[in-house]
Image 1: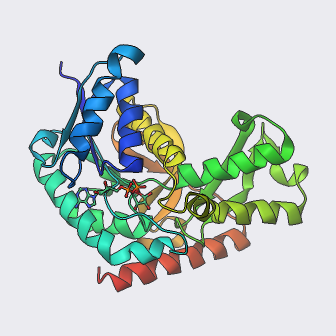
Image 2: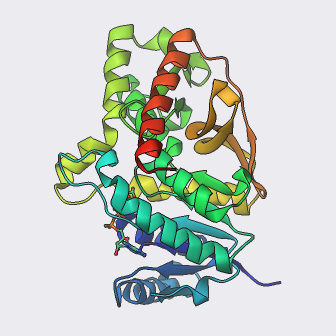
Length: 309
Ligand code: APR
């Protein structure tokens, strides 16, 4: 039996860190692709030379082409330009649209059975680009955003309450933008509703910090955007797929009527397993949360409209 193959496109901060985390898991060969000559090769070599120290097989290939990606089980798309201070995720739209379309075409033509995980921003719009280009069923085109946004939410809640982050469950749904929807009615600490533990006003502040979570990192870094939490979030999704874990994770999925939304990608609770997106799990949102989700959907539709999709 041959090992799994996972391709990561984009050997920048998010892509290279994703490749590192995957190599350390040692369950797949990893192909790292970038347009910059030497960059994926150099990072792959460095990662391979880490294998003997950390105890994994040195099976990372760095390349500027796509031949080595053929037959990938999972492909992660991180290629594109990242945000600079003062830029919103939406400012990246047209440049990243071209990049994601081209990359998707190159990947899917060589790996028709692959599952695509899109990371490039603006996330929900880029999922739509990949979906249109790949012509794969929706089960096999999934976006990474909700795991990251929820991780930020959970971090802030754990700090606020002085409890372990492992006991904090929090869902952030909707688009990966300023309109994202941290769903407080489904957020709890070891089963205790968050609204029993934190007052409304303070909770609203934490929700806002979550919405601004990406920008807070961008502002501090000054060049580039977050990558440790994003890459860890990607790998949690990959783990669930390649190990058929059936994790229930918030991911961007193509909606066909769920939550009253149709024909767009939005962050919703997804069961991820060997088949990719195996189920979208329905929630009973409050009227306020549903209204927020609708607003978030409008923002995504606007971007999709600008791209002419
Ligand atoms: N094909 C392959 N790689 C490309 C292409 C392309 N057509 N265009 C750009 N790249 C590569 C760049 O050369 C760069 O190495 O994508 C990489 C992006 O890396 P960074 O600039 O470090 O950006 P990063 O922080 O990794 O973020 C990547 O993920 O979270 C999102 O908003 C973020 O859209 C951004 C993406």
